Length: 567
Ligand code: ADP
Ligand code: MG
Image 1 (cartoon, rainbow, N blue to C red):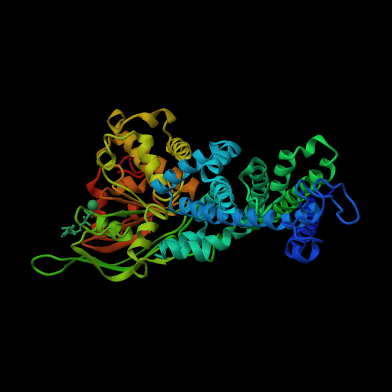
Image 2 (cartoon, rainbow, N blue to C red):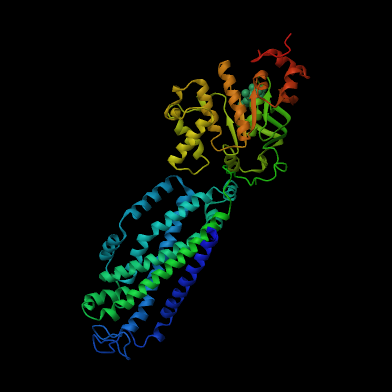
Protein backbone atom coordinates (compact mmCIF):
# COMPACT_ATOMS: atom_id res chain seq x y z
CA UNK A 1 0.00 0.00 0.00
CA UNK A 2 1.02 3.51 -0.65
CA UNK A 3 1.70 5.86 2.21
CA UNK A 4 -1.10 8.30 2.68
CA UNK A 5 0.54 11.51 1.32
CA UNK A 6 1.47 9.77 -1.91
CA UNK A 7 -1.88 8.11 -2.42
CA UNK A 8 -3.48 11.43 -1.45
CA UNK A 9 -1.64 13.27 -4.17
CA UNK A 10 -2.36 10.50 -6.67
CA UNK A 11 -6.02 10.73 -5.90
CA UNK A 12 -5.84 14.50 -6.12
CA UNK A 13 -4.28 14.24 -9.56
CA UNK A 14 -7.05 11.90 -10.72
CA UNK A 15 -9.70 14.24 -9.36
CA UNK A 16 -8.06 17.21 -10.98
CA UNK A 17 -7.80 15.53 -14.38
CA UNK A 18 -11.45 14.49 -14.49
CA UNK A 19 -12.62 17.80 -13.05
CA UNK A 20 -10.53 19.98 -15.32
CA UNK A 21 -11.44 17.91 -18.39
CA UNK A 22 -15.18 18.16 -17.72
CA UNK A 23 -14.99 21.80 -16.82
CA UNK A 24 -12.86 22.62 -19.86
CA UNK A 25 -15.49 21.10 -22.11
CA UNK A 26 -18.31 22.95 -20.40
CA UNK A 27 -16.47 26.27 -20.59
CA UNK A 28 -15.69 25.64 -24.26
CA UNK A 29 -19.37 24.96 -24.92
CA UNK A 30 -20.32 28.15 -23.11
CA UNK A 31 -17.77 30.24 -24.98
CA UNK A 32 -18.66 28.90 -28.41
CA UNK A 33 -22.40 28.74 -27.75
CA UNK A 34 -23.43 31.17 -30.53
CA UNK A 35 -21.59 29.06 -33.11
CA UNK A 36 -22.20 25.68 -31.56
CA UNK A 37 -25.94 25.90 -31.10
CA UNK A 38 -27.99 25.10 -34.16
CA UNK A 39 -30.59 27.85 -33.52
CA UNK A 40 -31.09 31.08 -31.67
CA UNK A 41 -32.52 29.81 -28.37
CA UNK A 42 -34.91 32.77 -28.12
CA UNK A 43 -36.55 32.20 -31.49
CA UNK A 44 -39.45 29.98 -32.30
CA UNK A 45 -37.89 27.55 -34.68
CA UNK A 46 -40.21 24.58 -34.53
CA UNK A 47 -43.55 23.27 -33.42
CA UNK A 48 -44.19 23.48 -29.68
CA UNK A 49 -43.52 20.26 -27.77
CA UNK A 50 -41.69 18.55 -30.67
CA UNK A 51 -40.09 15.26 -29.80
CA UNK A 52 -36.39 14.82 -30.72
CA UNK A 53 -35.75 14.71 -34.43
CA UNK A 54 -32.88 15.34 -36.85
CA UNK A 55 -33.81 19.03 -36.94
CA UNK A 56 -34.18 19.34 -33.18
CA UNK A 57 -31.97 16.79 -31.47
CA UNK A 58 -33.57 17.46 -28.08
CA UNK A 59 -36.93 18.52 -29.40
CA UNK A 60 -38.55 21.87 -28.64
CA UNK A 61 -40.23 23.46 -25.67
CA UNK A 62 -43.77 24.73 -25.20
CA UNK A 63 -43.26 27.72 -27.50
CA UNK A 64 -41.09 25.98 -30.08
CA UNK A 65 -37.59 27.03 -28.89
CA UNK A 66 -34.89 24.50 -29.74
CA UNK A 67 -33.98 22.74 -26.46
CA UNK A 68 -30.42 21.82 -27.52
CA UNK A 69 -29.72 25.47 -28.27
CA UNK A 70 -31.17 26.41 -24.91
CA UNK A 71 -28.98 23.83 -23.22
CA UNK A 72 -25.84 25.10 -24.94
CA UNK A 73 -26.61 28.73 -24.15
CA UNK A 74 -27.65 27.74 -20.64
CA UNK A 75 -24.03 26.74 -19.97
CA UNK A 76 -23.06 30.41 -20.32
CA UNK A 77 -25.60 31.68 -17.82
CA UNK A 78 -25.08 28.92 -15.27
CA UNK A 79 -21.30 29.24 -15.37
CA UNK A 80 -21.39 33.03 -15.43
CA UNK A 81 -23.70 33.39 -12.44
CA UNK A 82 -21.83 30.68 -10.56
CA UNK A 83 -18.39 32.12 -11.21
CA UNK A 84 -19.30 35.76 -10.57
CA UNK A 85 -21.21 34.95 -7.39
CA UNK A 86 -18.38 32.70 -6.15
CA UNK A 87 -15.82 35.38 -6.98
CA UNK A 88 -17.76 37.99 -5.02
CA UNK A 89 -18.22 35.58 -2.11
CA UNK A 90 -14.52 34.70 -2.13
CA UNK A 91 -13.43 38.34 -2.17
CA UNK A 92 -15.75 39.18 0.73
CA UNK A 93 -14.90 36.01 2.62
CA UNK A 94 -11.15 36.45 2.20
CA UNK A 95 -11.30 40.10 3.26
CA UNK A 96 -13.34 39.30 6.35
CA UNK A 97 -11.23 36.24 7.21
CA UNK A 98 -7.95 38.13 6.85
CA UNK A 99 -9.16 41.11 8.82
CA UNK A 100 -10.63 39.07 11.65
CA UNK A 101 -7.73 36.64 11.90
CA UNK A 102 -5.07 39.28 11.69
CA UNK A 103 -6.50 42.07 13.81
CA UNK A 104 -8.15 39.78 16.35
CA UNK A 105 -9.65 41.52 19.37
CA UNK A 106 -13.14 43.00 19.14
CA UNK A 107 -12.97 43.22 15.34
CA UNK A 108 -12.52 39.46 15.21
CA UNK A 109 -15.25 38.86 17.75
CA UNK A 110 -17.75 41.08 15.95
CA UNK A 111 -17.00 39.72 12.48
CA UNK A 112 -17.02 36.10 13.58
CA UNK A 113 -20.31 36.43 15.45
CA UNK A 114 -21.79 37.78 12.22
CA UNK A 115 -20.24 34.89 10.28
CA UNK A 116 -21.73 32.45 12.80
CA UNK A 117 -25.15 33.99 12.28
CA UNK A 118 -24.89 33.72 8.50
CA UNK A 119 -23.63 30.14 8.73
CA UNK A 120 -26.40 29.19 11.12
CA UNK A 121 -29.13 30.36 8.76
CA UNK A 122 -30.48 27.64 6.49
CA UNK A 123 -29.08 28.55 3.07
CA UNK A 124 -31.90 27.59 0.74
CA UNK A 125 -34.82 29.15 2.62
CA UNK A 126 -32.71 32.27 3.19
CA UNK A 127 -31.83 32.44 -0.48
CA UNK A 128 -35.48 32.08 -1.42
CA UNK A 129 -36.61 34.76 0.99
CA UNK A 130 -34.02 37.27 -0.21
CA UNK A 131 -34.64 36.26 -3.82
CA UNK A 132 -38.37 36.77 -3.52
CA UNK A 133 -37.86 40.19 -1.97
CA UNK A 134 -35.31 41.30 -4.55
CA UNK A 135 -37.27 39.94 -7.51
CA UNK A 136 -36.03 37.72 -10.33
CA UNK A 137 -32.93 38.55 -12.38
CA UNK A 138 -29.28 37.59 -12.83
CA UNK A 139 -27.95 40.31 -10.55
CA UNK A 140 -30.33 39.31 -7.77
CA UNK A 141 -29.14 35.74 -8.07
CA UNK A 142 -25.50 36.78 -7.90
CA UNK A 143 -26.02 39.04 -4.88
CA UNK A 144 -28.12 36.49 -3.03
CA UNK A 145 -25.74 33.62 -3.67
CA UNK A 146 -22.68 35.66 -2.69
CA UNK A 147 -24.46 36.83 0.46
CA UNK A 148 -25.01 33.30 1.71
CA UNK A 149 -21.72 31.63 0.83
CA UNK A 150 -19.04 34.18 1.79
CA UNK A 151 -19.23 33.26 5.47
CA UNK A 152 -17.83 29.76 5.01
CA UNK A 153 -14.85 31.19 3.11
CA UNK A 154 -14.30 33.79 5.85
CA UNK A 155 -14.25 31.20 8.59
CA UNK A 156 -11.82 28.93 6.77
CA UNK A 157 -9.46 31.81 5.97
CA UNK A 158 -9.55 33.22 9.47
CA UNK A 159 -8.42 29.93 10.94
CA UNK A 160 -5.45 29.85 8.59
CA UNK A 161 -4.53 33.47 9.24
CA UNK A 162 -4.63 32.93 12.99
CA UNK A 163 -2.01 30.23 12.78
CA UNK A 164 -0.02 32.02 10.11
CA UNK A 165 0.08 35.16 12.20
CA UNK A 166 2.15 33.34 14.79
CA UNK A 167 4.85 32.31 12.35
CA UNK A 168 8.20 33.84 13.06
CA UNK A 169 8.50 35.86 9.87
CA UNK A 170 5.09 37.47 10.27
CA UNK A 171 5.84 38.21 13.92
CA UNK A 172 9.15 39.70 12.89
CA UNK A 173 7.42 41.96 10.36
CA UNK A 174 4.92 43.09 12.94
CA UNK A 175 7.58 43.86 15.48
CA UNK A 176 9.52 45.72 12.81
CA UNK A 177 6.58 48.07 12.64
CA UNK A 178 5.37 47.01 9.17
CA UNK A 179 1.86 48.35 8.49
CA UNK A 180 -1.12 46.04 8.83
CA UNK A 181 -2.16 46.51 5.21
CA UNK A 182 1.34 45.80 3.98
CA UNK A 183 1.75 42.63 6.01
CA UNK A 184 -1.72 41.41 4.98
CA UNK A 185 -1.30 42.01 1.26
CA UNK A 186 2.35 41.14 0.83
CA UNK A 187 2.83 38.33 3.29
CA UNK A 188 -0.39 36.89 4.68
CA UNK A 189 -2.45 36.86 1.48
CA UNK A 190 0.22 35.15 -0.67
CA UNK A 191 0.69 32.59 2.08
CA UNK A 192 -3.02 31.73 2.24
CA UNK A 193 -3.51 32.01 -1.55
CA UNK A 194 -3.14 28.24 -2.05
CA UNK A 195 -6.17 27.89 0.18
CA UNK A 196 -8.17 30.63 -1.51
CA UNK A 197 -8.12 28.71 -4.81
CA UNK A 198 -9.95 25.60 -3.55
CA UNK A 199 -12.26 27.83 -1.55
CA UNK A 200 -13.18 29.67 -4.72
CA UNK A 201 -13.66 26.50 -6.73
CA UNK A 202 -15.84 24.92 -4.07
CA UNK A 203 -17.78 28.17 -3.71
CA UNK A 204 -18.44 28.05 -7.45
CA UNK A 205 -19.81 24.56 -7.09
CA UNK A 206 -22.20 25.73 -4.39
CA UNK A 207 -23.08 28.84 -6.35
CA UNK A 208 -24.02 26.87 -9.48
CA UNK A 209 -26.19 24.57 -7.43
CA UNK A 210 -27.85 27.51 -5.70
CA UNK A 211 -28.37 29.24 -9.02
CA UNK A 212 -30.15 26.17 -10.35
CA UNK A 213 -32.32 26.08 -7.23
CA UNK A 214 -33.16 29.77 -7.44
CA UNK A 215 -33.88 29.55 -11.15
CA UNK A 216 -36.00 26.47 -10.62
CA UNK A 217 -38.06 28.43 -8.13
CA UNK A 218 -38.62 31.10 -10.77
CA UNK A 219 -36.04 33.60 -9.58
CA UNK A 220 -33.90 33.30 -12.71
CA UNK A 221 -33.85 35.61 -15.68
CA UNK A 222 -36.36 34.39 -18.23
CA UNK A 223 -34.55 36.23 -21.04
CA UNK A 224 -31.22 34.61 -20.24
CA UNK A 225 -32.09 31.03 -19.43
CA UNK A 226 -29.78 28.96 -17.34
CA UNK A 227 -30.11 25.23 -16.87
CA UNK A 228 -32.06 25.91 -13.73
CA UNK A 229 -34.46 28.13 -15.67
CA UNK A 230 -34.92 25.36 -18.23
CA UNK A 231 -35.85 22.96 -15.45
CA UNK A 232 -38.18 25.51 -13.95
CA UNK A 233 -40.01 25.96 -17.23
CA UNK A 234 -40.08 22.24 -17.88
CA UNK A 235 -41.74 21.80 -14.53
CA UNK A 236 -44.20 24.65 -15.17
CA UNK A 237 -45.15 23.20 -18.54
CA UNK A 238 -45.73 19.75 -17.08
CA UNK A 239 -42.82 18.13 -18.91
CA UNK A 240 -42.52 15.79 -15.99
CA UNK A 241 -45.87 14.28 -16.81
CA UNK A 242 -45.00 13.26 -20.35
CA UNK A 243 -42.05 11.69 -22.11
CA UNK A 244 -40.69 15.22 -22.60
CA UNK A 245 -38.75 14.90 -19.30
CA UNK A 246 -36.30 12.67 -21.17
CA UNK A 247 -35.12 15.50 -23.42
CA UNK A 248 -36.28 18.56 -21.50
CA UNK A 249 -35.38 17.66 -17.92
CA UNK A 250 -32.62 15.08 -18.05
CA UNK A 251 -30.11 17.04 -20.23
CA UNK A 252 -30.04 20.24 -18.12
CA UNK A 253 -30.11 18.10 -14.97
CA UNK A 254 -27.10 16.13 -16.17
CA UNK A 255 -25.36 19.33 -17.19
CA UNK A 256 -25.80 20.76 -13.69
CA UNK A 257 -24.64 17.53 -12.09
CA UNK A 258 -21.57 17.34 -14.35
CA UNK A 259 -20.61 20.95 -13.66
CA UNK A 260 -21.02 20.64 -9.91
CA UNK A 261 -19.07 17.40 -9.94
CA UNK A 262 -16.29 18.96 -12.01
CA UNK A 263 -15.93 21.89 -9.60
CA UNK A 264 -16.12 19.60 -6.60
CA UNK A 265 -13.38 17.32 -7.95
CA UNK A 266 -11.18 20.26 -8.82
CA UNK A 267 -11.81 21.90 -5.46
CA UNK A 268 -10.91 18.78 -3.49
CA UNK A 269 -7.79 18.29 -5.58
CA UNK A 270 -6.68 21.88 -4.94
CA UNK A 271 -7.45 21.49 -1.28
CA UNK A 272 -5.36 18.36 -1.09
CA UNK A 273 -2.46 20.18 -2.69
CA UNK A 274 -2.92 23.40 -0.77
CA UNK A 275 -2.90 21.96 2.71
CA UNK A 276 0.54 20.37 2.65
CA UNK A 277 1.96 23.51 1.07
CA UNK A 278 0.50 25.59 3.84
CA UNK A 279 1.91 23.18 6.35
CA UNK A 280 5.36 23.27 4.82
CA UNK A 281 5.59 27.02 4.33
CA UNK A 282 6.84 27.36 7.88
CA UNK A 283 7.27 24.57 10.32
CA UNK A 284 5.43 25.24 13.56
CA UNK A 285 7.70 26.55 16.22
CA UNK A 286 8.73 24.19 18.97
CA UNK A 287 6.33 25.66 21.45
CA UNK A 288 7.65 29.19 21.37
CA UNK A 289 7.18 31.92 18.86
CA UNK A 290 9.80 34.57 18.64
CA UNK A 291 9.44 37.97 17.05
CA UNK A 292 12.96 37.58 15.87
CA UNK A 293 14.45 35.09 13.48
CA UNK A 294 16.19 32.88 15.97
CA UNK A 295 16.30 29.65 14.06
CA UNK A 296 16.84 26.70 16.34
CA UNK A 297 20.31 26.42 14.87
CA UNK A 298 23.43 24.92 16.33
CA UNK A 299 23.41 26.00 19.96
CA UNK A 300 27.12 26.76 19.58
CA UNK A 301 26.35 29.46 17.01
CA UNK A 302 23.62 31.00 19.07
CA UNK A 303 24.61 34.08 21.07
CA UNK A 304 23.72 34.01 24.77
CA UNK A 305 20.13 35.23 25.24
CA UNK A 306 21.33 38.19 27.29
CA UNK A 307 24.49 40.10 26.50
CA UNK A 308 25.17 43.39 28.27
CA UNK A 309 28.25 45.20 26.99
CA UNK A 310 29.79 48.31 28.56
CA UNK A 311 26.41 49.46 29.76
CA UNK A 312 26.44 52.99 31.13
CA UNK A 313 23.29 54.69 32.42
CA UNK A 314 22.88 58.23 33.69
CA UNK A 315 20.02 59.93 35.50
CA UNK A 316 19.24 63.57 34.82
CA UNK A 317 19.21 65.60 37.98
CA UNK A 318 19.18 69.24 38.99
CA UNK A 319 22.96 69.08 39.30
CA UNK A 320 23.38 67.59 35.81
CA UNK A 321 23.57 63.97 34.73
CA UNK A 322 24.51 61.44 37.39
CA UNK A 323 26.06 58.25 36.07
CA UNK A 324 24.72 55.35 38.13
CA UNK A 325 25.77 52.36 36.00
CA UNK A 326 29.31 52.40 34.65
CA UNK A 327 30.56 50.10 31.93
CA UNK A 328 28.86 46.92 33.06
CA UNK A 329 29.62 43.74 31.11
CA UNK A 330 27.43 40.74 31.79
CA UNK A 331 26.17 37.77 29.80
CA UNK A 332 23.66 35.13 30.77
CA UNK A 333 23.61 31.91 28.78
CA UNK A 334 20.55 29.76 28.17
CA UNK A 335 19.91 27.65 31.24
CA UNK A 336 22.30 29.74 33.31
CA UNK A 337 21.41 31.54 36.50
CA UNK A 338 23.48 34.62 37.26
CA UNK A 339 23.11 36.50 40.51
CA UNK A 340 23.57 40.27 40.46
CA UNK A 341 24.24 41.48 43.97
CA UNK A 342 25.08 44.82 45.50
CA UNK A 343 23.92 47.02 48.32
CA UNK A 344 20.87 49.23 47.94
CA UNK A 345 21.47 52.06 45.48
CA UNK A 346 24.31 50.29 43.68
CA UNK A 347 22.40 50.31 40.39
CA UNK A 348 20.96 46.80 40.20
CA UNK A 349 17.41 47.85 39.37
CA UNK A 350 18.74 50.34 36.86
CA UNK A 351 20.54 47.55 35.01
CA UNK A 352 17.42 45.38 35.14
CA UNK A 353 15.28 48.24 33.81
CA UNK A 354 17.75 49.03 31.02
CA UNK A 355 17.70 45.39 29.97
CA UNK A 356 13.93 45.44 29.74
CA UNK A 357 13.88 48.88 28.12
CA UNK A 358 11.87 50.11 31.08
CA UNK A 359 14.16 52.85 32.34
CA UNK A 360 12.37 55.79 33.93
CA UNK A 361 12.12 58.91 31.81
CA UNK A 362 14.92 60.55 33.81
CA UNK A 363 17.42 57.86 32.83
CA UNK A 364 19.29 57.38 29.57
CA UNK A 365 21.62 54.71 28.32
CA UNK A 366 24.68 56.83 27.61
CA UNK A 367 26.90 54.03 26.44
CA UNK A 368 27.15 50.35 25.65
CA UNK A 369 24.62 47.87 24.32
CA UNK A 370 22.07 45.38 25.55
CA UNK A 371 21.38 42.43 23.31
CA UNK A 372 18.33 40.29 24.01
CA UNK A 373 18.02 37.09 22.01
CA UNK A 374 20.56 38.47 19.58
CA UNK A 375 18.85 41.84 19.17
CA UNK A 376 20.55 45.08 20.04
CA UNK A 377 17.85 47.03 21.85
CA UNK A 378 19.23 50.32 20.56
CA UNK A 379 18.56 49.31 16.96
CA UNK A 380 14.94 48.36 17.56
CA UNK A 381 11.93 50.63 17.35
CA UNK A 382 9.95 51.23 20.54
CA UNK A 383 7.24 48.96 19.14
CA UNK A 384 9.76 46.19 18.48
CA UNK A 385 11.15 46.54 21.97
CA UNK A 386 7.66 46.35 23.38
CA UNK A 387 7.05 43.17 21.36
CA UNK A 388 10.25 41.68 22.75
CA UNK A 389 9.17 42.38 26.31
CA UNK A 390 7.02 39.67 27.78
CA UNK A 391 7.67 37.53 24.74
CA UNK A 392 11.46 37.03 24.71
CA UNK A 393 12.42 38.77 27.92
CA UNK A 394 10.29 38.95 31.02
CA UNK A 395 10.48 40.49 34.46
CA UNK A 396 9.57 38.94 37.77
CA UNK A 397 8.86 42.08 39.73
CA UNK A 398 9.82 42.74 43.30
CA UNK A 399 6.47 43.09 44.99
CA UNK A 400 4.10 40.32 43.97
CA UNK A 401 1.13 41.93 45.63
CA UNK A 402 1.54 45.24 43.83
CA UNK A 403 2.21 43.48 40.54
CA UNK A 404 -1.15 41.73 40.68
CA UNK A 405 -4.49 43.35 40.11
CA UNK A 406 -6.46 42.85 43.35
CA UNK A 407 -9.87 42.77 41.67
CA UNK A 408 -9.16 40.24 38.95
CA UNK A 409 -8.87 36.49 39.30
CA UNK A 410 -5.51 34.76 38.96
CA UNK A 411 -6.66 32.98 35.80
CA UNK A 412 -7.78 36.24 34.21
CA UNK A 413 -4.41 37.86 34.87
CA UNK A 414 -2.46 34.88 33.58
CA UNK A 415 -4.65 34.72 30.49
CA UNK A 416 -4.05 38.41 29.94
CA UNK A 417 -0.29 37.86 30.05
CA UNK A 418 -0.59 35.03 27.54
CA UNK A 419 -2.89 36.92 25.21
CA UNK A 420 -0.63 39.96 25.17
CA UNK A 421 1.49 38.01 22.70
CA UNK A 422 -0.55 34.97 21.65
CA UNK A 423 -3.83 34.90 19.77
CA UNK A 424 -5.46 32.35 22.01
CA UNK A 425 -9.18 32.11 22.44
CA UNK A 426 -10.76 32.32 25.84
CA UNK A 427 -10.71 28.61 26.60
CA UNK A 428 -7.21 28.04 25.22
CA UNK A 429 -5.91 30.92 27.32
CA UNK A 430 -7.60 29.42 30.34
CA UNK A 431 -5.93 26.07 29.67
CA UNK A 432 -2.59 27.80 29.32
CA UNK A 433 -3.20 29.62 32.62
CA UNK A 434 -3.77 26.32 34.39
CA UNK A 435 -0.68 24.88 32.72
CA UNK A 436 1.34 27.82 34.02
CA UNK A 437 0.00 27.40 37.53
CA UNK A 438 1.01 23.76 37.38
CA UNK A 439 4.46 24.80 36.14
CA UNK A 440 5.08 26.94 39.23
CA UNK A 441 3.74 24.28 41.56
CA UNK A 442 0.32 25.73 42.24
CA UNK A 443 -2.95 23.85 42.15
CA UNK A 444 -5.20 24.69 39.19
CA UNK A 445 -7.82 25.37 41.84
CA UNK A 446 -6.30 28.75 42.65
CA UNK A 447 -7.12 29.92 39.13
CA UNK A 448 -10.40 31.41 40.24
CA UNK A 449 -9.02 32.97 43.41
CA UNK A 450 -8.16 36.61 43.80
CA UNK A 451 -4.68 37.75 44.90
CA UNK A 452 -5.71 38.50 48.49
CA UNK A 453 -6.80 34.87 48.93
CA UNK A 454 -3.25 33.65 48.35
CA UNK A 455 -0.24 33.64 50.64
CA UNK A 456 2.80 35.76 49.81
CA UNK A 457 4.70 32.77 48.47
CA UNK A 458 1.78 31.73 46.28
CA UNK A 459 1.46 35.25 44.93
CA UNK A 460 5.15 35.24 44.10
CA UNK A 461 4.60 31.97 42.23
CA UNK A 462 1.75 33.55 40.28
CA UNK A 463 3.99 36.47 39.33
CA UNK A 464 6.64 33.98 38.18
CA UNK A 465 4.00 32.16 36.14
CA UNK A 466 3.00 35.43 34.52
CA UNK A 467 6.60 36.11 33.53
CA UNK A 468 6.76 32.65 31.95
CA UNK A 469 3.44 33.03 30.13
CA UNK A 470 4.96 33.47 26.69
CA UNK A 471 7.98 31.22 27.20
CA UNK A 472 10.64 33.93 27.27
CA UNK A 473 14.33 33.24 26.69
CA UNK A 474 15.50 35.68 29.35
CA UNK A 475 13.93 36.30 32.74
CA UNK A 476 15.03 39.02 35.11
CA UNK A 477 13.97 38.65 38.73
CA UNK A 478 14.45 41.85 40.72
CA UNK A 479 14.64 40.96 44.40
CA UNK A 480 12.22 38.05 43.87
CA UNK A 481 12.15 37.06 47.53
CA UNK A 482 12.04 40.37 49.33
CA UNK A 483 9.16 40.49 51.78
CA UNK A 484 8.92 36.72 52.08
CA UNK A 485 9.90 34.83 55.18
CA UNK A 486 13.03 32.72 55.01
CA UNK A 487 11.41 29.35 54.39
CA UNK A 488 9.22 30.69 51.61
CA UNK A 489 12.24 32.49 50.18
CA UNK A 490 14.04 29.18 49.89
CA UNK A 491 11.03 27.60 48.17
CA UNK A 492 10.74 30.38 45.63
CA UNK A 493 14.46 30.30 44.94
CA UNK A 494 14.37 26.54 44.43
CA UNK A 495 11.46 27.00 42.05
CA UNK A 496 13.44 29.54 40.01
CA UNK A 497 16.41 27.21 39.96
CA UNK A 498 14.25 24.33 38.83
CA UNK A 499 12.51 26.38 36.14
CA UNK A 500 15.67 27.65 34.52
CA UNK A 501 16.92 24.07 34.23
CA UNK A 502 13.63 22.75 32.92
CA UNK A 503 12.92 25.62 30.52
CA UNK A 504 16.49 26.52 29.61
CA UNK A 505 15.95 30.09 30.76
CA UNK A 506 18.67 32.66 30.97
CA UNK A 507 17.85 33.87 34.47
CA UNK A 508 19.31 36.98 36.05
CA UNK A 509 18.41 37.21 39.73
CA UNK A 510 18.97 40.59 41.31
CA UNK A 511 19.37 40.77 45.07
CA UNK A 512 20.97 42.85 47.77
CA UNK A 513 21.44 39.61 49.64
CA UNK A 514 24.43 37.57 48.53
CA UNK A 515 23.53 34.35 50.36
CA UNK A 516 20.13 34.38 48.69
CA UNK A 517 21.59 34.10 45.23
CA UNK A 518 24.53 31.98 46.29
CA UNK A 519 22.05 29.21 46.95
CA UNK A 520 21.03 28.91 43.31
CA UNK A 521 23.37 30.96 41.10
CA UNK A 522 25.98 29.51 38.75
CA UNK A 523 27.82 32.81 38.71
CA UNK A 524 27.62 35.91 40.85
CA UNK A 525 28.32 39.46 39.74
CA UNK A 526 28.95 41.99 42.47
CA UNK A 527 27.96 45.59 41.83
CA UNK A 528 29.34 48.51 43.77
CA UNK A 529 28.44 52.11 42.96
CA UNK A 530 27.43 51.19 39.45
CA UNK A 531 30.53 49.12 38.67
CA UNK A 532 30.97 45.37 38.58
CA UNK A 533 33.76 44.79 41.07
CA UNK A 534 33.78 41.04 40.97
CA UNK A 535 32.23 38.32 38.84
CA UNK A 536 32.84 34.62 39.00
CA UNK A 537 31.68 31.20 40.01
CA UNK A 538 29.06 31.52 42.75
CA UNK A 539 30.95 29.37 45.24
CA UNK A 540 34.24 31.19 44.68
CA UNK A 541 32.65 34.61 45.06
CA UNK A 542 30.76 33.63 48.19
CA UNK A 543 33.47 31.59 49.89
CA UNK A 544 36.64 33.36 48.85
CA UNK A 545 35.64 36.88 47.84
CA UNK A 546 38.49 38.86 46.33
CA UNK A 547 37.09 42.35 46.41
CA UNK A 548 36.82 44.03 49.82
CA UNK A 549 33.30 45.13 48.98
CA UNK A 550 32.25 41.54 48.30
CA UNK A 551 33.71 40.54 51.66
CA UNK A 552 31.56 43.16 53.33
CA UNK A 553 28.47 41.80 51.54
CA UNK A 554 29.28 38.24 52.59
CA UNK A 555 29.78 39.31 56.16
CA UNK A 556 26.69 41.53 56.23
CA UNK A 557 23.95 38.96 55.72
CA UNK A 558 23.02 35.91 57.73
CA UNK A 559 23.30 32.72 55.74
CA UNK A 560 20.38 30.54 54.76
CA UNK A 561 22.72 27.61 55.13
CA UNK A 562 25.79 27.93 57.33
CA UNK A 563 29.03 27.67 55.35
CA UNK A 564 30.64 24.26 55.63
CA UNK A 565 33.89 25.64 57.01
CA UNK A 566 32.35 27.92 59.63
CA UNK A 567 34.83 28.85 62.33
P1 ADP B 1 19.43 49.30 43.41
O1 ADP B 1 18.36 48.62 42.65
O2 ADP B 1 20.73 48.60 43.34
O3 ADP B 1 19.02 49.57 44.80
P2 ADP B 1 18.93 51.51 41.64
O4 ADP B 1 19.29 51.01 40.30
O5 ADP B 1 17.51 51.57 42.00
O6 ADP B 1 19.73 50.71 42.74
O7 ADP B 1 19.54 52.96 41.81
C1 ADP B 1 20.88 53.25 41.46
C2 ADP B 1 21.13 54.73 41.65
O8 ADP B 1 20.34 55.45 40.75
C3 ADP B 1 20.80 55.19 43.05
O9 ADP B 1 21.88 55.97 43.49
C4 ADP B 1 19.59 56.05 42.90
O10 ADP B 1 19.69 57.19 43.73
C5 ADP B 1 19.62 56.45 41.44
N1 ADP B 1 18.27 56.54 40.93
C6 ADP B 1 17.40 55.51 40.85
N2 ADP B 1 16.23 55.92 40.29
C7 ADP B 1 16.38 57.24 40.04
C8 ADP B 1 15.54 58.25 39.47
N3 ADP B 1 14.30 57.96 39.03
N4 ADP B 1 16.02 59.50 39.35
C9 ADP B 1 17.27 59.81 39.77
N5 ADP B 1 18.10 58.90 40.29
C10 ADP B 1 17.68 57.63 40.44
MG1 MG C 1 16.46 47.91 43.35
